[in-house]
Image 1 (cartoon, helix red, strand yellow):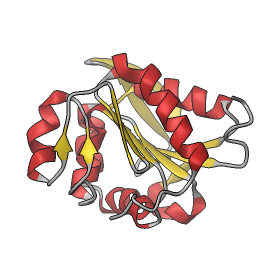
Image 2 (tube, rainbow, N blue to C red; image 1 turned 180 degrees about the vertical axis):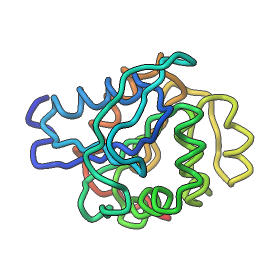
Image 3 (cartoon, helix red, strand yellow; image 1 turned 135 degrees about the vertical axis):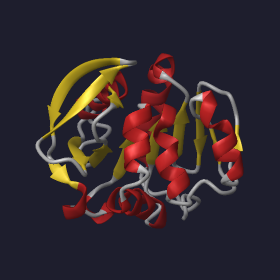
Image 4 (tube, rainbow, N blue to C red; image 1 turned 60 degrees about the horizontal axis):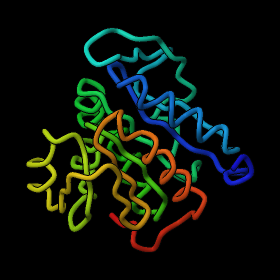
Length: 187
């Protein structure tokens, strides 16, 4: 698997309050598959992870979301975490960054509450997606077909519900990133 993502660069978009395991496990697997990975955030310096409701570790931010573009990356990963997702969906640069991946037909992997950013970016209409169950109504209201499944793949959009789904989420994220652009991945 180590050769599968050689030459690919993947952005992980988070701010304080992300679910730590939803960053670290995909990060390690995608990096282990050969991709270069960057932690992108509207926060400068470091961001704080969470282990459910307990404070986790801090992580160094590689790039400010205002200083990067989807052109710089082959794929985007959106970890969850209620606070993280709520803050990202209110950040214009973060929302625009996420939307640009859809405009460029690039793979996006989202887990748990991360879908709030995609709702704000208006890219879920007509798409089949899963998320943490409390987002089901939000996603349906935004025009998505919400399903309660471990992992869903829809034309380059990979989604999962919670940390328990990480093994399936990671496998499908790596597969979609390796495949590259998807014509059906649109904004």
